[in-house]
Image (cartoon, rainbow, N blue to C red; front, top):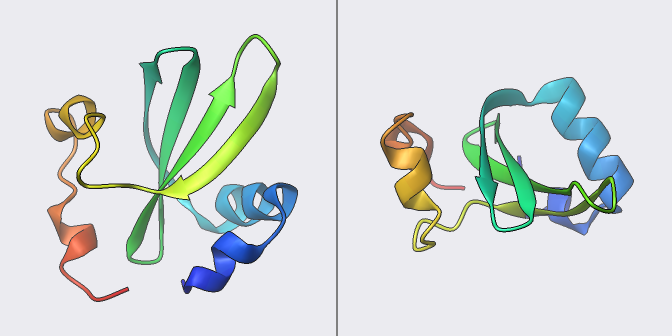
Length: 85
């Protein structure tokens, strides 16, 4: 996966993730349900807003984010970052 993925329209990003990505887990974070996917050697977060019933954004996982605490105790993420993007 290249950074070109993030240049696609949101609807196309979702199609690619659901067809080619591997769902890892979901967390609740403020007003969002965040689904974590593996796409190639990258981890990608999908932010779903329950109140609006829509995906608001898709972004690469930020290892510096406080959300890492929610993921770290449930899934090993290091193998996804052992390769250069």
